[in-house]
Image (cartoon, rainbow, N blue to C red; front, side, top):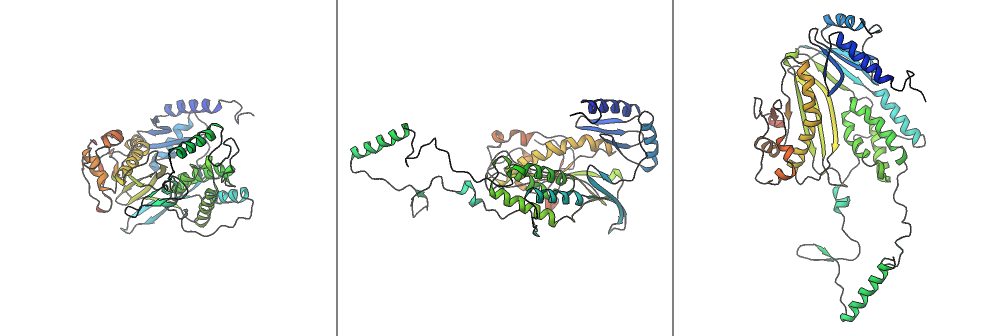
Amino acid sequence: MKAVSGHPDSGSFWEEHCDIRVRAAGFEPIGATWPSTYFHPKLKLYLVIYADDFKLSGPKGNLAQGRKLLREDITIEEPQAIGLFLGCTHEMGTFKLPSGKLATSMTYNMQGFFEQCCETYSELAGGNVRFKKVSTPFLVEDSKDGPAGTPAATGPVVEWPWCLHTFPPPVIHKNINELDTVKSKAAGKCASGHDKHGEDDSAPMAASDQGKMGKFAACILMKCLYGARMARFDLLRAITHLACQITRWTSECDRKLYRLMCYIHSSLHIRLVGWVGDDGSQLQPHLFADADFAGCAATQRSTSGLHMSVRGPNSCFPISGQSKRQSCVSHSTPEAEIVAGDFSLRMCGLPALDLWHTLLPHKPPIMFHEDNQAMINIVSTGRNPTMRYLRRTCPLYTTDAADDLLCVDLGARQTILNNKHTKLP
């Protein structure tokens, strides 16, 4: 196998060469957390480079000058109208807001990509798959049916009428000699490698419940995940939870995957739309965090979700969305919300400050939105009388924040705790 450009490290050579030429043209890198992104402080131009694609945005009057600077040392084709980029069709337009102001809109269309996902699934599933019309990507789940809700042992039990707890039935021996005999027989069976039913422990176990789509799951889910991260945030939770089961795929996972693909096929018309109708000085990044307490029926773990958008009086533009199953089992909704808030700030909120403080002239703080009152009290005070274990279990979650994170929103009440830059305690 040979590299596309003839050298195995051609990509690194091009990246280094391009970086030197772009810097010479007056563009400055955003930062280490935003590789291949540059900003021209004088012309107010934002440049994104992906392989050999250059995407330039900024004031219309400065675009021609920015392209001229780049062409001094780099051979670039004539600019083309915005369209397909990174597999997503960008459709720009304008419309009038209810306030009467004209806004510029951007529609992210990935219908063709998801049609390919459905075709790939149908082909790997044997062909001629009939997709049903469904309204959600999820099957009905109940936590009582999960492993955490099942008994620790099987067999006959005795139920205590007062507390309704169950216990193994009592075994009564006639005398101490009979008890000793039973114990010696059990010890002998264990030593010989047989269990209490006389079965050899070394015998092969019965075939486990293995789903038919397990060997194709990674191919299908990762393809769908790319489209979900680009323009379909509503698919993230279903895809990421199924991705956690790739190494232990079952027939139930087959049913969930089929349901997910049916929902994708039923919602090909959905688009991600953002619009801006304000000046840059009126825009501000907003970060929303949430958690579903014990949302995973199998493990009782919660799921962290985040959504970042840029908003203004006449603007609302989605930036990113993520969903990730938490690595710990939370004991309450506020605890799950704290973990979700920490995940949102570390993975999206704080890294975004480098970008927005460069692009927006007034360097606004991030508006952090949270809908759980107990979690907000913990963040604002650093403690909670009924959750005194937080300092041991979540010390970093409740103390590690930044000065630019300031406003916490109570959701429906829209109450701001503090309008100044305040470090979380």
